[in-house]
Amino acid sequence: MNIFCSVSLNEIQKDFLKKKIDDNFFFLEDSREKSFENFMNCEICFGNPEVDWVKKSKNLKWIQLESVGFEKYTKIKIPGLKISNLRGFFSIPVAETALAGILSLKRGIYRLSSLKDKKKWLGSRIRPTLNLLNGSNVLILGAGSIGSKIKTLLEKFNCKILMYDKFKNDADLLNINDLDIHLPDVDILIGCLPENYETRQLLDNYRINLLKKSSIIVNVGRGSLIDEKTLIKNIKSEKLAGAFLDVTEKEPISDDSPLWSIPNIILSQHSGGGYESEVNDKILFFKENLSRYKNKILPKNIVL
Image 1: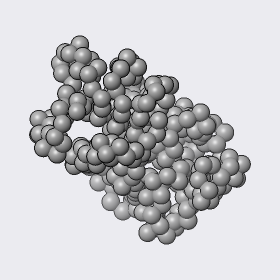
Image 2: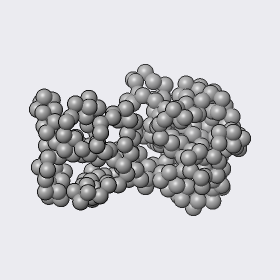
Image 3: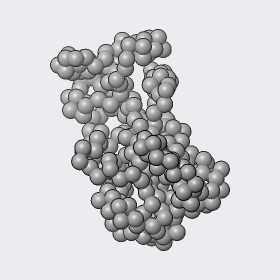
């Protein structure tokens, strides 16, 4: 079976893939033309291929994405083509990243790191500026696997947690009016939502201004969730305490973006889902799903 791998792999990872899966693999090559030719001859793709290549393929039957996001493929209409994602795969590392960001803002770790770089000792003077995570009012936007994992971690800190998700019946808040009512009481607002027409700019100028000045915003979902201009303005004018952003509206951000220079905006550069064995674990997930495909069982996490 011909399989095209568009995942960026080093030689060790390629060897791991070929040892785990006994099929004929084609990898991205320096020659774009040769890569395209190989792609056209494959029934399966492991990774996130170019949309135009997918549209032109006559043989492609299944794509196993290496991401949760699949937005750019939603307009592809090819009879018989199945696309699966990695829903739930990144929930633990992303939740831990969110917790790290929250603690950095609450406990002033970002400031202490800056003081170390400057060789500046403040000692006891910094103590009154630190805040506790324990007992905080938290509102999580998105009750999927990532939001649920974050909730589990924050429960250990005795946080009072509400979850908003209009598509999850077990969420605490199901409509936008309930969300607006609770925003003024929130200490920590966490975004874990996918990108769609209902979530774009959900945290607009109006909703960001409902938050109190001691609130922090965390976004580990999609950058389109937040009106960044309002976020930047409110943090610079001390109408918000800070933000931790794993995702931004544009990635990478431009060299002149104010996000770089505001100390209490922490950027993790969309690395929140990363960990040492990430690629190998993706390969193992693909191996399991490939077995299902070969046995004519629908692969897990079909999204399109």
